[in-house]
Length: 391
Image (cartoon, rainbow, N blue to C red):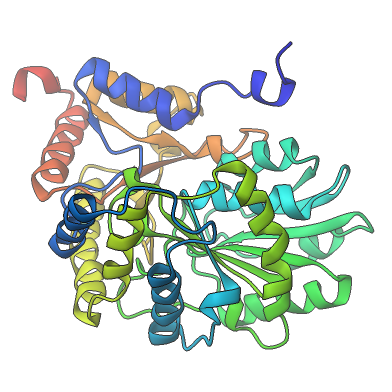
């Protein structure tokens, strides 16, 4: 027997598009893995920790040095006062953090509101934890928070609201008024908000980032999730962290105890060094990524793609409806892979019904030469020339 939730889930769109890119020699701008942004200090710290040890189980909650670094980083950049001993938990990636949270806080039949477009893992993990997914849709081109629809979606069975800010794939940063609206709903209906804030350090053009954990009156209702993979461009390390009030974190820690129990100590030690890097590192990362964003967005627009502004994250979203008479972003993504030699991912994969088929996502956390090559291929494709002969 196979569990139907996982049995029916299939291969993720990110994996399938990356596989197609590899098979065809296409430039993969679909999956969100960065190229060449890792800080040297982080790698050196990991090497030193691997050489010197220890190599046995670290504390279940995480290395004290890393938990303290998480709290200190949040204080430095967001003004948050966090008790690292009782309010911080280290996990094996942000996806494990989500898993632990859903397993700990949901019971059979509990409803969870998610905002579409949404990271595909949310729905599967919620269902496996016994919850029911209730999608509330953000629609192009402005991706505004639909306050009336959100209010109507809340029922007596609603337990959680999950928010991703800055938001993958569209780069939306929820502003203080929107966060206050969410906070008031949580208080009125006795809800917990899961704040997936893994892109907190990837905000551009001097824009501020506001954490839900800082909103007055709901600290004890927020589970805040962060990711070393995003902040330090080491997605393969799978080091994440949860910040929550002690009462809320305690059951989540119990779930973590039985899911992974712990995370490699050398990587934890290195991430602690990373979180304590000076401001110049974090500001430099934003500046570098903004430069790559500008390079890709300009190139896409010059090649005839309609691209919205990108305030945050790794991703630029293009409206391809004018270029896609079939109105199928998945088929269009495969077509670009085969015909243009550049691979995006379809934004329809971030909607449960897969019915918003007008946009595709490109990742700009790449080397300059990768972006330049990809843009040149897309331009040749738009001019009716083959990319293989010209590459």
